Structure formats: structure tokens, C-alpha cells
Length: 114
Image 1 (cartoon, one colour):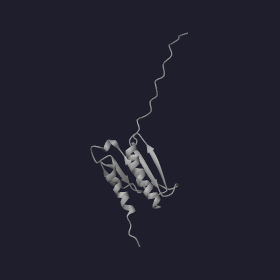
Image 2 (tube, rainbow, N blue to C red; image 1 turned 30 degrees about the horizontal axis):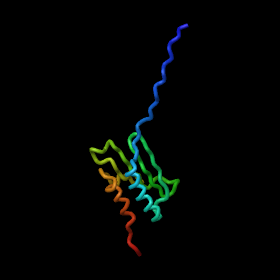
Image 3 (cartoon, one colour; image 1 turned 90 degrees about the vertical axis):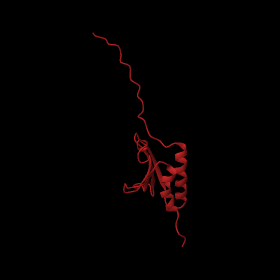
Image 4 (cartoon, helix red, strand yellow; image 1 turned 90 degrees about the horizontal axis):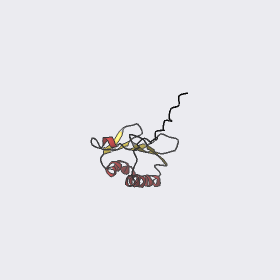
């Protein structure tokens, strides 16, 4: 009978995930609160993936997202790591600063008064 020493288990490390930091989430949630108060948005979802962090905005829970606010660090040196993607997948704005990218959604709050 050939007895071999037990093979130690390799520690399982969680895959690296991209996340929004506190300042980024504060800026996004401030805009989200304004849009909820205006009756435009009703729900959101956050996804932390290995390539990107995504904040999805919904008009109703069961729908596809109206907008996705994405953070992709690999694009930092090229086009900017922040982007706002529309419902159809079209990139509405991309940039290096989150506040500048979110301005396209803030413009939706400005409406003429009848």
C-alpha cells in the first residue's frame, strides 16, 4: 500500500472585482435621488465584475435598464474609464471624470415649465 502525504488545499482567492469607491457612489446616488424625486427613475442595480463596475438605472423593476453608468479601469489611459450607456447600448458620454460624465443625465432634469 503506497501512502502519499496529503496534498494541501490551495487557498481560494476571490477574483479581483472593480467597484465604485465612496465618492463615486455619493455622486451617482445624489443624481439617482434627484431623478427619483422627479419621478423619472424607480430602481437601480449595482454589478461588480472583473472588468467593470456597473450602476444600472430602471424606470420599473422588471424592465431593461434605462441607463448604465460604467467604470472600466482598463480604459483609463485611452477614452476615460467612466461612461454612460443608453438603453440601446449606445455610449452617450465617456470621460475621465465622473462628474463630467454624469452631466448628460443631469440635463434630463432641466425642463421648461408650462
